[in-house]
Amino acid sequence: MSLFSVIIPTYSRPVFLQEAIDSVLAQTTSDYEIIVVDDASPEPVVVPEHSRIRVVRAEVNGGSARARNIGVEAATGDVVAFLDDDDTWTPQRLSFALAALERAPVAVCWQSATGGRMLDGNVHDTILDSITPNFGATAVLRSAWVPIDESFRSCQDLTWWLSISRHNSVATHPEQGLEIRRHAAPRVGYGTEQRIRDSLRLMDEQAGYFRSHPYAASFRWKRIGLMNLALGRPEEARKAFRRAFRLHPTAVDAWHYLRSFRG
Image 1 (cartoon, rainbow, N blue to C red):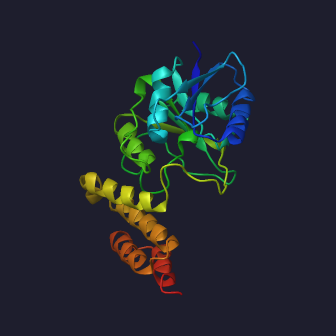
Image 2: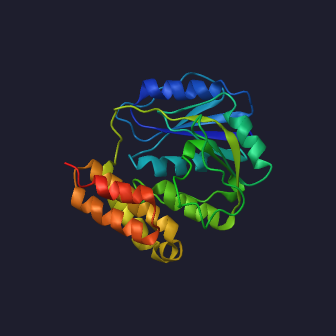
């Protein structure tokens, strides 16, 4: 049994996967296992022969939420941590988690060298007011784990954060532990259209939360507006930006609304 179970969901990205695994093997903390969850890739995943690494293969492609849940089910460690197959960790990522876990059962680090949110204590009322921490920047005591809603192909991090923060406190280690890779490779199972649909579904299913948390509702409408703008739908974008502004007026939302009129 290891202290950490590092779960890496993957689907047909062998080069990226190898780099992700290498970044875990380079950790300054050595008490971990690596569970690679092959989400039914057409060609079964091949990983280096290593005593710390094992592969769990899903029978059917279920998406990253299902893959992460499968990984947690297979985990033997007291703490579960996550890494997407196309991202990497800095060498002290797990050390940062250890430091934060001394203060709370849910630990996050920054995912940018320029900083990030400082989430500490009970964050349920503010967690959706801005970008939520990436799963790759999150470590959780298994005793506090809440399964991810597998019915969401996107927005699964938002639903999970709402669930986990309801009964668990959070601590942030203010250093970068996750390096998010920007690339043009396809995102399997979802795109901007799916993110819009899931955002609207989330707001409908969690209507009570969003009614009592206008900052969170405003931020979600702004994100919906930006996604519609990216898809070339200025009228839909303007509707979303207007709703965001009414809920929580900001100069940024006003600017987004005005720029939606530009050709």
